[in-house]
Length: 111
Length: 114
Image 1: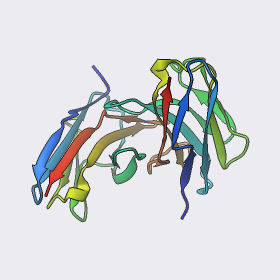
Image 2: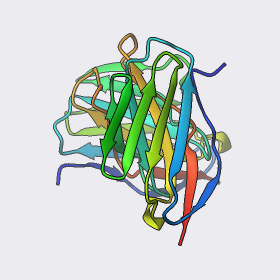
Image 3: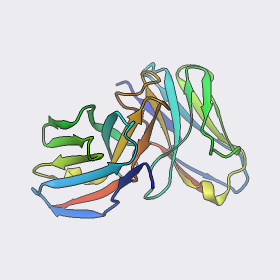
């Protein structure tokens, strides 16, 4: 079992839809959880960052962490064509000083 | 703007011909990372530098080497590229070794091996 599992999609939604992206993980040692957005032929950029279980909101984006279920989600409200990208979840634990990434979910928002 | 810059954006090299990819940063971050990302796969950490301290991942092939001559620059050397080394190579930095507040990535170098 991989440490971090992420459905690669692709996911295609109409403009204005609510998007839900998810990752599961197996190692309870993960402490910090992040979402990166990667446009085609570009490097990932940090979108959301959270530590504790619960929700964190930033504009149209909400990151949710459920440590008891080892499950994290990213919700995008009122999705826009400019949100079309690959979304990577990433997790950090202190013991090895590195981020572990999911494979990424390719999202297309259609006008 | 403070940033991470990778050169070149696209690199074509011949099978077996050594190639060097470069990364520079204006963030003054202590840690620099090199990732390999193949299509539809998670970025795979090759190695990282914490200041001048080099840390190699156990499964990084010997074919891959790195140099960090100063805080701002880091290089990835592929001694004898094979077809399987064709990928996007991403450089990233973090303020400290904990990296808890995330990494800053460059735009990547897409390597093609012919």
